[in-house]
Image (cartoon, rainbow, N blue to C red; front, side, top):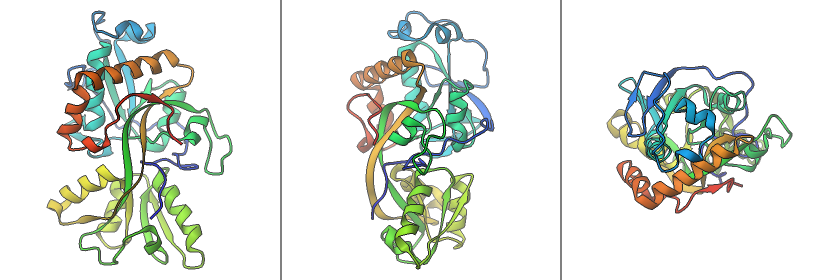
Length: 313
């Protein structure tokens, strides 16, 4: 099975930069200690944090880093008990300790996240987003300029896996096994692009692709037998297989392939914030907080050993 680098990109294996603002589903406040509240007001300035002085003055004064995310992607980020929780919020909490500011997570549709960043509604995007050259350069599916690119601070590695109905009734083991069948996928993601690439390989043996706003909708199609497979990052696919329906709804088919970096997306004009985040990530890798988060979510095999910028291909 061949697949692109990880999660939910579009356009030459990166997500499409959608036109229009992000549809806000809710704002959750994540403190530097990991607690979230509904209070989105100005935070108290915290000047004694190790890396506070590295931040742009605007963020120092606000005491907040505004984060765009798609909180429907457990275990990376999802809503539980009125809060946005998961791997990304926990990593952000650890970063917050180093930077001395709060991370405010706002949930919306994935394919609008980069637009929300480049229009200034968010300071960063942290949503299990794959770092790719196309996204760095703002290219569409055809490799043409479609918008402003972004920079990435890479913090996580993941491959992709097929998610099929429990028992794998269609005996799906690779992308090639999907030819002549119907699949479901979240719109604007690397997975949609991967399926489109596979459809070209299938030729006359048509691969039909049903795309949805959320991955939950795609999962439902697989669950009821209206599609034979969904495609997700391996940690997400494994989590869904383990938890959905008490582990009775899905299973992972074909293993994990094509590992690549997830990145925290930052506006290219905001290099000071980008570099502060890089320093903060290296700090939590060094002090062990990063490893603790990955241990908590059983994803230690997705760890990076140091922060990098724009390492995606």
